[in-house]
Structures are given as structure tokens and as C-alpha cells.
Image (cartoon, rainbow, N blue to C red; front, side):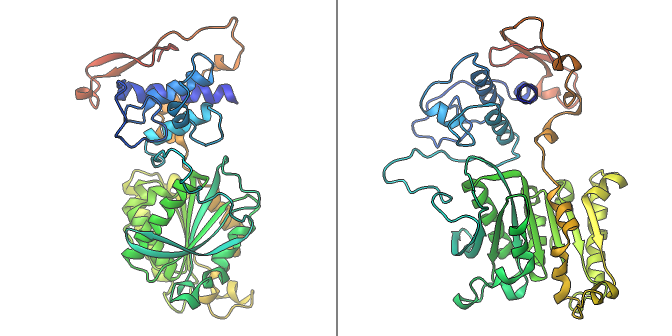
Length: 410
């Protein structure tokens, strides 16, 4: 598995490096340092990933000090191919950049250090650009900041919103919030208590999502959203602003207030649920959201089969609720979150780094699985690409050398 990961990262690094070229190291005394910028040139790119790969393969050692610290993406005090993959994800903008700050005696510990796990942590406030947002969060039992966990950002209905100190924690009473802590797979659960269902609350939700991605052990490939009723209206606006943060979104008993196209263009999967006779919204709101998203996915070039994997609509009839003793169809809409198959559908979605790899590079040669006849030494790595001014037309070919290592012609 390690050999396969090394190969895949090397191929992706080569593809990216061919486009980006090699930058010279420059002085960084007055510049903010970013995790992944191993050569300290101010840019996180494939050159940094290749340097980490050579270190992991024991071909050469990174300099001790800042370079090694910037290379340790997952903070586990080891520099491996997994760090190189994280660097490539950062370079490809599949995950946000993280600023490196030198620790000192006056430095406060990371937010996820020395905090309770396996229980809700209430009464938190994020003071962001859009004002204060109150929230509760849950770290799984045995949370380890050197690992990566899926995370869900789940917004409650009207009764779980923020109306002052007396409303603190009301969101935790809702099934759509609390049930995620019962998943067999350990995951981080975050639930903001916003004050309305407009754009400001949507932007606060985005800020809170980014805050957790930057400060907690979040698997950025598996960040999810969920919203019920008023929370669904807010989350639909989030999907119209920053859907690329989320692999999938569960839209429960609500109307869609955001734009449709961004979710489709970012390949964010959406599951829509509404009772046939929902007293507050009516099922047409769900149908309208589905139709709008369906058209957006088709406009984005998805085939009918692909669209089905990204978009689901469930409008259960009255009998479904009555058989479960539910007579208020809107309030009973939280039963959606109790359906294990729906939660499994959501959590099965993932933003894979391979999405950034050209199809022709995704196949590992058969010979790779056989032991080499003799040990080899990487000397130089060459790439066939095209001049930037003709890259789209692919008319002016160009060969580049990257990182001073060789894996043959690609």
C-alpha cells in the first residue's frame, strides 16, 4: 500500500510540477509561512511534495528546522508520503492553506488539546468577520489530533436557533444534531446556533466550517452538511456560496434558498427529504429544489447515471408517518435522520484527491506490482508538457525537469 501511495503521489506531483515549474528559494524572514511550503519559496506546489517524497524514500534528507516542520502536514512528527499527498491537495486547492506559527512559551495550545472527548462541548463562541456565532461541538471518544476524522456541520430547526443565553444547547435536543454522535465510525460533529436563515448566518456557518478544518483533525475529503427546516434554508445558502467545502449535504424538510449551479459544479452530492403533506413548506418546495439541482447537474455535464449518484429525492406519503405514530408531518420530518440508510448514503460520499488527476494517470502499470529485478536509483525526472500559451490547444510541446529526480518519461 505504501508503494502504491508513493507511486500515485509521484505521478500527481509530476503532473502538477509540469504545469507549475520550479521556483527558487527566497528569503522568508518577513513572510507568513504556510504548511507544505517545504522549500520556503512562498508557494505550496509539487516541488515541495517531491522533496517530501525523496525524504520519505530516504533518497535525501530535508533540512532540520523549519523545512521539516512545514513538511509535517499531519503533525505526527513523521514525514511520509501521506504528508506529500496533503501538500498536493493544498497545491490543488482541495484543502485550505494553513499558516505555520512557531510555538513559544506564550503560545496558546491548539483548540483541540486538553478538551473532553465523547461528549458535547457547549457554550462556545466564534468571533468572526460576520459577528459572533454560538455553537456546540463533539469530538469522538479517543480523539487523536494526529489522525483525520470526517466532520458534519449540522444546523437545527427554528427551536434550536440562538435567542439568548436561555436557548444555549437547545439544538442538542434535535435528532438531526444528536444522532451523528452515535455513528459507529468516529466523527466530529459541529452544530451552530445561528440567529436567522439569511446570508449572514450562511457566511457564519462557512466561517465555522473553515475554523474547524484549520484547527481540528478534519478529513477535508469528508466534510458533510445537514439542515432541518430553518437550518435547511441556511445550509442551502451555504451550498450556493461554498459547496466545495462539503462532499455531501442532507436537506431535510426545508426549502432551497441558495443557488443551484455551485453545488453541481463542485460535485457536491445532495439528498432532499420532505413529507408529502408537510404543513409548513409543502412537498412542492422539495420537488422544486430537486428539479433545479437536476438541471444544474445536467448543465455541468453529468449523465443521468452520474446525476443519480449525486442527487436523491424522497417524498414519503402520509402512511409512512402514520405507521410510525407521527401525525405532524413537518415536525416529524426529523425522522429522516433516524434512517440509517440515508446517513450511510451521506457518509459514503468523499472528495478524493484523484479527482485532480487526469484519467490517463489513474491506472497503475501492471509491472509496478512485480518486484524489481534490481534496486534502482532515481536520478532525474522529465515531463512532456506544453508551452503555457498553447496549453489549451496542445500545439507547442515542451519537456521539463522537476526536482532533480527521474522516473523515466511520462
